[in-house]
Every structure is written in structure tokens, then in C-alpha cells.
Length: 267
Image (cartoon, rainbow, N blue to C red; front, side, top):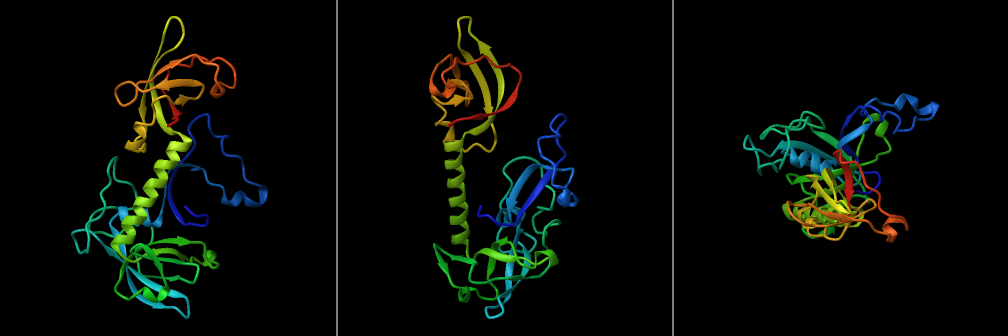
């Protein structure tokens, strides 16, 4: 996401033993410190509202004054233009995502936002001018930093005018996610480690739910920390062997604990 993008998040207090992982704020910023400083989920406005079945109808736009008024609309069966995007896993998240209802957290009343020449307006496959926005359009947006943020003001950073532009934005973001995990590893749980008598062994791990399916085929011959692996069965049951390659910085691989742990799996 571009720097300055407004996001929503769900946070928890640090797990026992990890209270010091977040460094303390300077004395003049301590009033902004919160106890819940470990993030469970962070998502932009587009994802937050669309996944909970809320879109926005353009009420009016004043290009000269750089203002746009939007009205939230439910996109579920209770009154809407399009069924909400369902959650694919896990329990219902806080904030309201019941079909046909507006969100409970977030903005759920008509609101006037800043909009200017910096705002990206997407229609179909291309960027368009502010003049392409029409009252009555159903849109999604990403908000950005605004000069009047201290007074609760927001600026539209990106706005998607039609279903084609929103679908393409979703696919572009998915491709970024896939590529990111290919280049920077994907997370998984180590379930079991079986050590061979004369070095090497078998690591059984479960990939995180966020791991893209297309990345599973990339795990063959990858590495977990200082351990070389190769894909076998059950999604991922890799074998590992001692090595002296650059992944170990010239030293032999060390055996690890068999206790379950969250580890990066390199694609």
C-alpha cells in the first residue's frame, strides 16, 4: 500500500514474554502509546468496507472546492446492488459484516471528503479525471492523509468507479501478495521434526492460511532458516540435510527444537 494510506486494524496486548518487542515512545509521544500494540489484522478502506458488504453512493462532487459527498449503502440482500464478498475463513470479525447492514466500526453515515488532483480515479482499466465522477455512482475508495486530520477530515487517495476497476485492483493486489511471498518467504507452523541417526531428517509443517496456493509448488528445494528442505507430501513435509552452503553462512546446519513454532518458509 502507498505510504499515507488510511488503514483499519485489530490489535492485542503483547504475548507473555514479548512486552519489550515494541520499543517505548519518546517522552513527548508517550500520550499516544497503547497497550494493544500487536496487530492481528490491518486492511485498507477498500478491503474493509467491501468485505463487510458496504459500498458508497456519490451524492455530489464539487471539483472547484475539492469536495465529494458520499453516502454509505449496504450491498447485501437487504437493499443492495451487489452481494457482499464473503469471508473465506475464520469467525466474523468485529466491525459488522452482516449482509444488508452497514458497518458498526468505520464510517457509516454520509460524509464529505476532500478530493483533489492527487486523487487517483479508476474507471475500467484507466485513470480518469475528477469530471468522470457522477452523482449516483456506486464506488469504493482508499482514504489518505488530510491536512485537517486532527479535526476528523479525510482525503480520497484512490477511488474506483465501476466493478471492472475494482476487480482489476483486487487482482493486482493479489499478484503483489503472491510475488511478495515468493521473494520474502511465507509463514507456516512446524508440526514435527524427525531427526535421522546420521544427520538430516524430515520436517512436517503446515503453511499459514494466507499462503497463496500458487506458492505451494515453489517450496521444493527451498530453505527454512539454516535448513534446506524439499517438498514431499501433505501440502508440505520437507526433508532437510546438513549443509555448508551460503544459506548457513559457511557453517553446518544446526538441529532445531521439535516444538511447534511459527517460521518463515522460503518459496
